[in-house]
Length: 389
Ligand code: PSV
Ligand code: MN
Image (cartoon, rainbow, N blue to C red; front, side):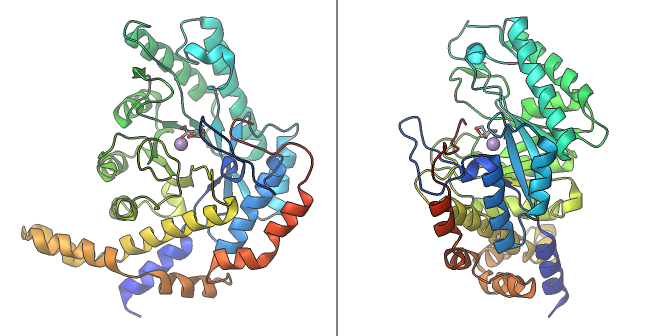
């Protein structure tokens, strides 16, 4: 094997992808949440499903929590449960968007009492991090307005900044704040953190341990996401990804399903910035909902899609690319990228899996494993976990 081949395999062996607890629960749109037999009824069962994905893929050793959806009495016990199953608790996602008090906003609400309640929840999420050993607090705010004049855009930025500073001050030295942005929804006129620029500006005033999260579904159609990746990575402010696919709005479909070429271009910028490895500080998470498909195989498929995009990005011949770029050979430079993208990396990934002692076809292995039949038989009674619970 040539030197590049060895490096590609080495990088792929070290790749880590985090899965979301809510990806295992029932989900839907505002029109309907469909239920499915075997879906977890609590955070313990969600973690069990995440551990199955890790066992079958070998590259998904952590699971993101969502508070309050994953509220338990004893978080240390939950972390132990995860460890017993061979995974760990990853990012803690705060939820200040599903309480009646937050109708007009959470940390940017005009009423200081509501803002206090929201900030207290964010501080509580840091308590959960302390108890579970999680390093990252992820903040996404549904805050915004629906009508011009509804509230002061500027005052809301001041309130946001004040809240972020208080929570940042609560973090331990090894903990980070990851600030996520989203163009619109549920607010339709202004959103308080609508784009990477706003998130970046706030992170700059907070400090080194505040970084931006790029959720691939949170942009206007046609946005060049890899440009954002390049700029944030260069500034040392790229903290994490929430991978998913969109055709129209925030569709939360399987990563790499709508546009594998976009995912490849994103991973190319990651490789260029040399921030692929687990020590790079960039966390690669999935944030998706499986509304009509089986959950666990869909998560596995997403993990594989991210692996495939990464493998193709690693295969880009960087020497040839640099030479073509330096000589202004536009077509040759583009051809280098397209050659890598057109490579069928599936045989290499199958080989790598075999080397690592996992089945070369994790989805087939899942169907053979009996896990689906077992959970459908055992997980009866109680209430299934779903988006929002
Ligand atoms: C919001 O749309 C988001 O992308 C945030 O990451 C949330 O935490 C997640 O979805 C689940 O609602
Ligand atoms: Mn997200």
